[in-house]
Image (tube, rainbow, N blue to C red; front, side):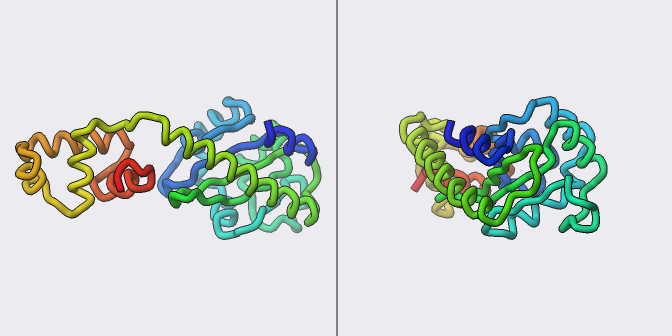
Amino acid sequence: MTLRRVTHEFSLQHVTLLSVNNPDEKLLSRMIVQSSIPDAYFAEFDRKHLLEKCAIADIILQSKLPFCWSIGDPLPSRPFAIDSGIEDIQRRYGLITSVAMTLHSLEGERFILRFDGARPRLTQVELNEIGMITLHAFDMFEKIRRDQRKTAPSPLTTRELEVLRWTAQGKTSAEIGQILTLSDHTVNAYMTNAIKKLDCVNRTQLVAKALRLRLIA
Protein backbone atom coordinates (compact mmCIF):
# COMPACT_ATOMS: atom_id res chain seq x y z
CA MET A 1 0.00 0.00 0.00
CA THR A 2 2.78 2.46 0.94
CA LEU A 3 4.74 1.86 -2.26
CA ARG A 4 1.63 2.14 -4.43
CA ARG A 5 0.92 5.52 -2.84
CA VAL A 6 4.52 6.63 -3.37
CA THR A 7 4.33 5.54 -7.00
CA HIS A 8 1.20 7.62 -7.53
CA GLU A 9 2.56 10.69 -5.72
CA PHE A 10 5.58 10.79 -8.03
CA SER A 11 3.37 10.41 -11.13
CA LEU A 12 4.74 6.93 -11.81
CA GLN A 13 2.72 3.79 -12.53
CA HIS A 14 4.69 0.73 -11.47
CA VAL A 15 6.95 -0.49 -8.66
CA THR A 16 9.15 -3.60 -8.73
CA LEU A 17 11.35 -5.30 -6.13
CA LEU A 18 14.14 -7.41 -7.63
CA SER A 19 16.50 -9.87 -5.96
CA VAL A 20 20.00 -9.48 -7.46
CA ASN A 21 21.94 -12.16 -5.60
CA ASN A 22 22.74 -14.43 -8.54
CA PRO A 23 25.24 -12.77 -10.92
CA ASP A 24 24.70 -15.55 -13.48
CA GLU A 25 20.91 -15.14 -13.69
CA LYS A 26 19.66 -14.99 -17.29
CA LEU A 27 15.93 -14.47 -16.74
CA LEU A 28 14.42 -11.29 -15.33
CA SER A 29 11.27 -13.12 -14.23
CA ARG A 30 13.27 -15.23 -11.76
CA MET A 31 14.59 -12.07 -10.08
CA ILE A 32 11.13 -10.68 -9.31
CA VAL A 33 10.10 -10.56 -5.66
CA GLN A 34 7.04 -8.44 -6.40
CA SER A 35 5.96 -6.19 -9.27
CA SER A 36 2.92 -4.34 -10.56
CA ILE A 37 4.17 -4.58 -14.16
CA PRO A 38 2.09 -7.10 -16.20
CA ASP A 39 3.49 -10.64 -16.37
CA ALA A 40 3.40 -10.41 -20.17
CA TYR A 41 6.20 -7.83 -20.03
CA PHE A 42 8.56 -10.20 -18.20
CA ALA A 43 7.58 -13.12 -20.43
CA GLU A 44 8.47 -11.16 -23.57
CA PHE A 45 11.61 -9.70 -21.96
CA ASP A 46 12.90 -13.20 -21.18
CA ARG A 47 11.77 -14.73 -24.46
CA LYS A 48 13.93 -12.18 -26.30
CA HIS A 49 16.88 -12.69 -23.88
CA LEU A 50 17.02 -8.97 -23.14
CA LEU A 51 18.57 -9.24 -19.67
CA GLU A 52 22.01 -9.92 -21.14
CA LYS A 53 21.64 -6.73 -23.21
CA CYS A 54 20.71 -4.53 -20.25
CA ALA A 55 23.52 -2.19 -19.17
CA ILE A 56 21.69 -0.49 -16.33
CA ALA A 57 22.01 -3.13 -13.59
CA ASP A 58 25.75 -2.60 -13.03
CA ILE A 59 25.27 1.18 -12.86
CA ILE A 60 22.53 0.84 -10.23
CA LEU A 61 24.51 -1.65 -8.15
CA GLN A 62 27.55 0.64 -8.07
CA SER A 63 25.51 3.57 -6.76
CA LYS A 64 24.34 4.09 -3.19
CA LEU A 65 21.78 6.68 -4.28
CA PRO A 66 18.65 6.48 -6.44
CA PHE A 67 19.54 6.41 -10.13
CA CYS A 68 17.15 7.85 -12.72
CA TRP A 69 17.08 7.44 -16.50
CA SER A 70 14.55 8.00 -19.26
CA ILE A 71 14.19 6.63 -22.77
CA GLY A 72 12.23 9.82 -23.41
CA ASP A 73 15.47 11.83 -23.28
CA PRO A 74 17.11 12.82 -26.59
CA LEU A 75 19.71 10.25 -27.64
CA PRO A 76 22.78 12.50 -27.14
CA SER A 77 21.80 13.29 -23.55
CA ARG A 78 21.31 9.69 -22.37
CA PRO A 79 23.95 8.59 -19.86
CA PHE A 80 24.30 5.14 -21.45
CA ALA A 81 23.21 3.21 -24.53
CA ILE A 82 19.86 1.42 -24.38
CA ASP A 83 19.35 -1.69 -26.50
CA SER A 84 16.72 -1.12 -29.19
CA GLY A 85 14.81 -4.22 -28.13
CA ILE A 86 14.62 -3.02 -24.52
CA GLU A 87 13.58 0.47 -25.61
CA ASP A 88 10.83 -0.96 -27.80
CA ILE A 89 9.26 -3.13 -25.09
CA GLN A 90 9.51 -0.37 -22.48
CA ARG A 91 7.77 2.14 -24.74
CA ARG A 92 4.96 -0.33 -25.46
CA TYR A 93 4.39 -0.91 -21.74
CA GLY A 94 4.68 2.78 -20.82
CA LEU A 95 7.95 2.37 -18.90
CA ILE A 96 9.48 5.60 -20.17
CA THR A 97 11.18 6.94 -17.06
CA SER A 98 12.68 4.78 -14.33
CA VAL A 99 14.31 5.31 -10.96
CA ALA A 100 16.01 2.51 -9.08
CA MET A 101 18.00 2.04 -5.89
CA THR A 102 20.15 -0.78 -4.52
CA LEU A 103 19.23 -2.07 -1.06
CA HIS A 104 21.02 -4.49 1.29
CA SER A 105 19.42 -6.81 3.83
CA LEU A 106 20.98 -7.55 7.21
CA GLU A 107 21.82 -11.02 5.89
CA GLY A 108 23.88 -9.54 3.05
CA GLU A 109 21.32 -10.05 0.27
CA ARG A 110 21.03 -7.40 -2.44
CA PHE A 111 17.80 -6.03 -3.87
CA ILE A 112 16.83 -3.32 -6.34
CA LEU A 113 13.64 -1.33 -5.82
CA ARG A 114 12.54 0.25 -9.07
CA PHE A 115 9.76 2.67 -10.03
CA ASP A 116 8.61 3.14 -13.65
CA GLY A 117 6.16 5.36 -15.46
CA ALA A 118 5.40 7.64 -18.39
CA ARG A 119 6.67 10.97 -17.03
CA PRO A 120 9.77 13.14 -17.57
CA ARG A 121 12.96 12.45 -15.61
CA LEU A 122 12.71 13.10 -11.85
CA THR A 123 14.29 16.23 -10.41
CA GLN A 124 17.09 16.01 -7.85
CA VAL A 125 14.69 17.05 -5.09
CA GLU A 126 12.30 14.24 -6.09
CA LEU A 127 15.17 11.75 -6.19
CA ASN A 128 16.22 12.74 -2.67
CA GLU A 129 12.65 12.29 -1.43
CA ILE A 130 12.10 8.94 -3.15
CA GLY A 131 15.45 7.71 -1.83
CA MET A 132 14.47 8.36 1.78
CA ILE A 133 11.04 6.79 1.27
CA THR A 134 12.63 3.74 -0.40
CA LEU A 135 14.96 3.15 2.56
CA HIS A 136 12.05 3.40 5.00
CA ALA A 137 9.88 1.05 2.92
CA PHE A 138 12.67 -1.51 2.65
CA ASP A 139 13.18 -1.42 6.42
CA MET A 140 9.50 -2.29 6.81
CA PHE A 141 9.83 -5.10 4.24
CA GLU A 142 12.85 -6.48 6.10
CA LYS A 143 11.04 -6.41 9.45
CA ILE A 144 8.07 -8.30 8.03
CA ARG A 145 10.39 -10.83 6.40
CA ARG A 146 12.33 -11.41 9.63
CA ASP A 147 9.09 -11.89 11.56
CA GLN A 148 7.88 -14.41 8.99
CA ARG A 149 11.15 -16.33 9.22
CA LYS A 150 10.85 -16.54 12.99
CA THR A 151 7.39 -18.09 12.80
CA ALA A 152 7.88 -20.20 9.67
CA PRO A 153 8.99 -23.82 10.08
CA SER A 154 12.49 -24.67 8.87
CA PRO A 155 12.57 -26.05 5.30
CA LEU A 156 15.13 -28.62 6.53
CA THR A 157 14.50 -31.66 8.70
CA THR A 158 16.14 -32.08 12.10
CA ARG A 159 18.66 -34.55 10.66
CA GLU A 160 19.48 -32.28 7.72
CA LEU A 161 20.11 -29.41 10.14
CA GLU A 162 22.36 -31.61 12.30
CA VAL A 163 24.44 -32.63 9.28
CA LEU A 164 24.56 -29.02 8.12
CA ARG A 165 25.74 -27.74 11.51
CA TRP A 166 28.62 -30.22 11.58
CA THR A 167 29.48 -29.36 7.97
CA ALA A 168 29.64 -25.68 8.92
CA GLN A 169 32.20 -26.67 11.57
CA GLY A 170 34.43 -28.21 8.92
CA LYS A 171 33.59 -31.88 9.45
CA THR A 172 33.74 -34.32 6.52
CA SER A 173 30.94 -36.75 5.67
CA ALA A 174 32.92 -39.57 7.28
CA GLU A 175 33.43 -37.60 10.48
CA ILE A 176 29.76 -36.57 10.61
CA GLY A 177 28.77 -40.19 10.06
CA GLN A 178 30.82 -41.25 13.08
CA ILE A 179 29.37 -38.47 15.25
CA LEU A 180 25.74 -39.20 14.30
CA THR A 181 26.19 -42.96 13.83
CA LEU A 182 25.26 -42.78 10.15
CA SER A 183 26.86 -44.12 6.99
CA ASP A 184 28.71 -41.78 4.62
CA HIS A 185 26.01 -42.47 2.04
CA THR A 186 23.23 -41.36 4.40
CA VAL A 187 25.12 -38.20 5.39
CA ASN A 188 25.63 -37.33 1.73
CA ALA A 189 21.94 -37.99 1.04
CA TYR A 190 20.94 -35.52 3.77
CA MET A 191 23.33 -32.95 2.29
CA THR A 192 21.98 -33.48 -1.22
CA ASN A 193 18.40 -32.99 0.00
CA ALA A 194 19.35 -29.81 1.86
CA ILE A 195 21.16 -28.43 -1.20
CA LYS A 196 18.06 -29.00 -3.34
CA LYS A 197 15.67 -27.53 -0.77
CA LEU A 198 17.67 -24.30 -0.43
CA ASP A 199 18.38 -24.10 -4.18
CA CYS A 200 22.17 -24.24 -3.82
CA VAL A 201 24.86 -25.77 -6.01
CA ASN A 202 27.32 -27.10 -3.42
CA ARG A 203 28.02 -27.45 0.30
CA THR A 204 29.84 -24.15 0.57
CA GLN A 205 26.91 -22.20 -0.83
CA LEU A 206 24.52 -24.25 1.31
CA VAL A 207 26.33 -23.37 4.54
CA ALA A 208 26.54 -19.69 3.57
CA LYS A 209 22.83 -19.53 2.73
CA ALA A 210 21.81 -21.40 5.89
CA LEU A 211 23.80 -18.90 7.97
CA ARG A 212 22.16 -15.95 6.16
CA LEU A 213 18.73 -17.45 6.75
CA ARG A 214 19.72 -18.14 10.37
CA LEU A 215 18.80 -21.81 10.04
CA ILE A 216 22.08 -22.56 11.81
CA ALA A 217 24.24 -20.42 14.09
